[in-house]
Image (cartoon, rainbow, N blue to C red; front, side, top):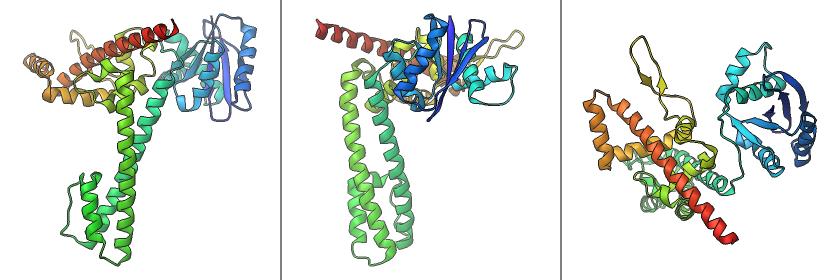
Length: 349
């Protein structure tokens, strides 16, 4: 088995081929990153035989086109988390950092970790991720405008102190526009412009939320039924997971999302602590769902009480709840993927 590690960049890709012992067999760098260059890499890899696998650092904003072309050509690709590369570079006999060194680190990390998630084409998950990311960008932009608006309003009238979340609603935006209408100052003019920008951003944000709710209801009916998983959270999970089929078990999924605890055994004491590894976006989505369940879901509340009676702290109990919730999410996503596959077979028949 030959492993080909790829260090992907915006304008170039560097590939290093290694054998099953991690020994370097060859290297190649493309001048551009077009489909023709990707196919040329495949032709170059043919010299090492058909029994091969590609490994790419998990940075899909740079490698998505590469993965799409490779998968369309029938190649197998695994995604290597960036944290694994650091260990490979540290253990190598070469020093420094270059594209060939990074590509070699990717290949050796893939050899050392045989159960890495594989890449595959999933346009639906990518579209959801793009929409979720776009909505989050709009929300962040609206927050910046609201902060500026509040400073201008404070300058105009220090006694006026609206609720921090007031300007995300049209009602309070109308109130602000009405109070600013009769003022003829530069500060008031800027504040009126900010009110209109916030209003337009809120319209776009609400429209995206509605679209995500409709898409999620169709794409993940089982996932959306989990207590604490809103339509936005479900869309976030689908987009970040990018295909639950990539994970061979619920344990692999838990390790990927960072809910699998890290063992820290010492002498005769067996303990586990918080894992800082994994996809932090996924971990944050699961954490929010766990907090919601801790407030309002009877089973989760009973579980937290049981852990408290066993001597666990509140934080430790929440971590255990997140690990259990990760398994629930995994099973729900597997069910949704199975239903989707059945629908495809039915349409094909």
